[in-house]
Length: 518
Ligand code: ADP
Ligand code: MN
Image (cartoon, rainbow, N blue to C red; front, side, top):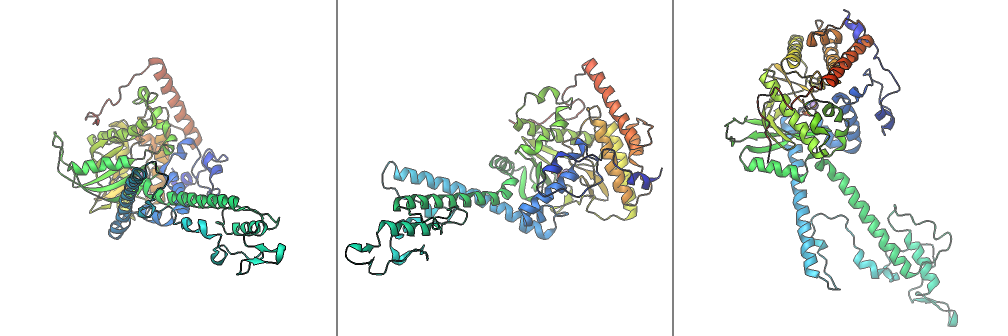
């Protein structure tokens, strides 16, 4: 068939666009040729693009590092390590401050006069010098808020004569002066036009307002600070850090060198493997990748679909809380990798699973991860080789592992040792999943588009590829009919399952029993 014609074919559902498009605060993204089914909203490529935009807006420099094609020797030693060091320092400072607060409380007890340890704090939310000018403001000679508009009192401290004498403590003068000083509060503090309406603020009211302005200023400084820290906090929370420390302490990992990737759902670190501590003496690879599934839940909401409808998880899903569901993602990736490993598909080898942290072998060398297919420039010879290898892997994945990758694209294939390695299989499902065949079709579309654009003339179009992988021999010669047939097949399967109450145990064909932690 004509590959060009297929590649140029319009997507079937060129509707108004998915929900995220209208919500996107950075404006409507440029139209892509990707169709707009729910399945596509979950595609990594799309997620990556959105995330990149989002992160570029929030953290310009950090993203440049995290999203670079791959980490090179130079930035490993600086950016990732710097981030880790900062994280550790920050955590240390926080703990120090917490301890200081406890000591301060203990020291002061119920005493009316208290001593502040503020100056010894490591993390300063806002450098305020408020304590001094609480009294200072009354002294006109050193008035830090000197305003132009109200009449000033001369040095002698009074104006006028006899009973018309007005001292600097005169209520009206002071009131106006206070109003003018209010203008000097932090710009974000809305004071209104007090001068214009000749507002006179008593000292007491002014003091209260000033106090409030200060605390507002501090609060906003704290909020801002949080925002900046969240880049690092995106990496790992204290509980995860503890898990990682434990692995290092146990000698299983030698050192954790730095962060390879921060995505929406996971953060991946590089580590040097340590000595085996397993009873079964599983050899720990010299270099490991640690995939930490994020325990912040909102990103995972969209992905419920993959797990909820997966028969292997059906009985368990409804009873689980979100934290456990995230552990299940990690567990799922482990099981899927194990199946692939058993079928001889090049993929990371599972080392251990602890809660939401999955340790596997590192694809790459000397801390440099293998490049994604999207980032590597292959010769036409290698490109062709890669294509046939992927075709073969997709077939084996389907037939031998009974899996559909469900996020297969040039983003999740690494080029290493002259071949393609598959990664990122936490969302992979069995072909009998209610949307399994749709996911497979999308995978096929990504793969055939990538290789057709890459100049592999032998590359099958997405429909041919789908049939070659699944042996389903769908005859439709256009995308719309093809997809309709796929959905019909899914329906038949679903009905069959409903009728026969197919009960499938969690992981029927995995060689290894799951590694559950304490
Ligand atoms: P995500 O769900 O965030 O896409 P991935 O499993 O795809 O998670 O990992 C993100 C990135 O981390 C990958 O694109 C790859 O660059 C790197 N990576 C993940 N696992 C490994 C590994 N075993 N070896 C080397 N690099 C890896
Ligand atoms: Mn990925």
